[in-house]
Amino acid sequence: MKPPDKVLVTGGAGYIGSFTAQALVDAGYQVVVFDNLYQGHREAVPQAATFVQGDLADRSAIAALFDAHPDISAIMHFASYTLVGESMHKPFLYLRDNVSNAANLLEIAIARGVRRFILSSTANLFDLPVDQQGAPIREDCPVVPGSPYGESKYAIERMLGWLNRIYGLKYACLRYFNACGGTPDRGEDHEPETHLIPIVLQVALGQRPHVVIFGDDYPTPDGTCIRDYIHVEDLAQAHILAMEALDELGVRHYNLGNGQGYSVRQVIETARRVTGHPIPAVVGPRRAGDPAVLVASSEAIRRELGWTPRYASLEAIVRSAWAWHSRHPHGYRDRYAQGEQG
Ligand code: UDP
Image: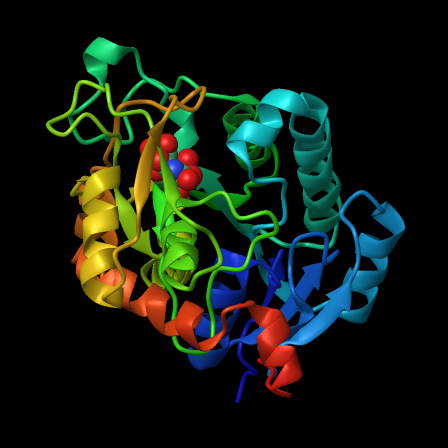
């Protein structure tokens, strides 16, 4: 019997990468995680995966990875700098490092015969002018990167286009909207934390006095920004579906969200219900670069691959995030202390 495909997951110790690595293990794949642990957590890597610590800036480390695992047949590429705000202060981490690290990986992988690649991309490709904001964003909407972060992902998307033409690389770019949620054993753990749902839950845990709402004067019903929150396990399933369909599909770009928008105030309200904590909120100034509304149309991946998010409601998503945060108030450090892994 043929052994299961071996999939390389770069950034597989990070938030979305580790969920996807776990989903691949659960689906019966062999998984190799390559991560420099800059933001990721060793404890987040599934126990059944092979872990290799290394940096994509180091070409000899990538070559050694493929020497040790010549049978890698597909790559899911999560490893990157991922913060919109940071990218406005440190643009070269994004415009240089994200792009050149992807080029290092792709050059060596293609030389070793890999022809299937899934890119972790972003809704930050769609910083549309104000008069175009609001309608669900389809894949054919104009790409207007909102930051050097989005620009770096777009550069990699375009690089992939050329590698398809030149080498026949099959690839999918998955543009996530707001990834969130968890399970009792796996969840979000960033240092520093910048995302709304974990911040709100840290208030419920008594780790912060209040949440600051970044602006309540947007042209939305309650004045706060509207986002499309999609559970990380649903994203993980989308990666597997896309990878399995690549031989047939060749090249795809998919926007991934629930297709329903929730305001910052609605997220806080939901977290109050889920946690039973009053979660004080104060209104602060707008955060630079935040569009008023970002909601995905995921009609394409639903139709073509039959992707159906299991966590359809914000309440279910926040509940799942709370299951993680309430059990691990200090994230993976708690899991380490409890002797758990993977
Ligand atoms: N937000 C907020 N207070 C916070 C963090 C986030 O009001 O402490 C808002 C942010 O302005 C955005 C939404 O919550 O409108 C989601 O932000 P997040 O950073 O979670 O994700 P992003 O939309 O930037 O990918």
